[in-house]
Length: 366
Image 1 (cartoon, helix red, strand yellow):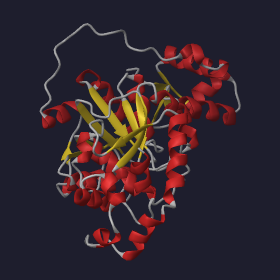
Image 2 (cartoon, rainbow, N blue to C red):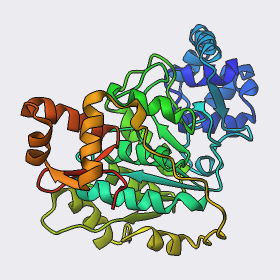
Image 3 (cartoon, rainbow, N blue to C red):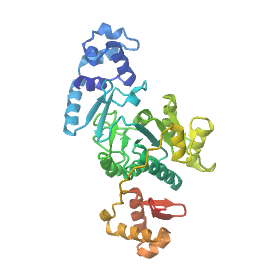
C-alpha cells in the first residue's frame, strides 16, 4: 500500500490525475517505474508534476501514514481493489484511495444519503424520524456528512433504529469535526463507520467539504434532501448526484420557510422527485417490501445512563406526553438557564424532540 498512498501524497496529483495515470500505465507500480519522457507524453502532465514524482519527497509522508493506519486499525480502500465502494467507483472523479474505520460494509444492498441544513427545524427533524424509522425493514445503509443539523440527526436516528450509517468526513481520521459529535461518531464505529479521502493531519478546511459531498452522493443509490436553504452543501450534493445520474428526492415545505426554499427549488426545476414519506421513496426506487418476520424488540432508550437531572425531565415527559418549557420549569423548579442546558443536551442525544412553541416530547413517542 506504500506506493498507493505515496501517489496521493504527490503535490499536483488529485483524483482525476491519479486515475489518468492509472489508466495510462495500468498499475501504480508502472507509474513510479515510468521515465520522465513517458510521463510527459501524457496530456496535461507537465514538467512540474513530473519533477514532483521523481523527487521521492512524498515517500516519508507515505511511510508515516502507514504507521498511523496500522496503529489505529484503519482500512485503506484502493480503487482497483474489490472492497472499494462499487457505486463510487462508477463516478469519474472518485478518489483513488479512501481511509475507512468501522464495521459496516461499504457495498451494501441499498444505500441512501440523507442531507440537509445545519439549522434543522422541528419539521425537518420530524421528517427525518419518520423516514428513517420506516426504512428499518429495508436492509438499508444511511450515509451523511456528520455535520450539525440534518446530517447528525440522520446518523443518530439510524443508530437508534439499528440501521448501519456511515459518516463521510472532510478531514483525516485523527480527529472529529465538529467535536460535539465525538459521541455519535464513536457509536457509529460499532454499527456503521467513518470514511474519508483525506490522510491524517488534514484539518477540516472549508474547501474540503464541497469535495466531500461528491463521496456522499457517489456512495448512494439515491440522495434525499430533507431541508435546505437556497444555498448550501445539501444543494451541492444534490447537484453532484444528478451529474452522476443518481436519483435525488426532496421534501417540499412552506413557501415562506427559509429552510425549505432549497428543496422547493430542486422540485420546481425537476432536479429532485417530490416525496412526502418513505412509501414515496420505496415506490420510486422499486424496492420490494420485505416479507413479514419476527421482529426483535425495539431498542429502548438508554434511560439507565441518564444523569439525575435528565432522568427527572425524561420521567415527567414520559408521563405527560409533551409539555412546554414553562410547564417543565414549574415541575423541576430549576433556573431557566439550567433547564435550557439540560433540554439542549437531551435533544442533541436524540432523547427529546423539539416542537413549535418551545414544546418538547420524547423522541419516538406518538
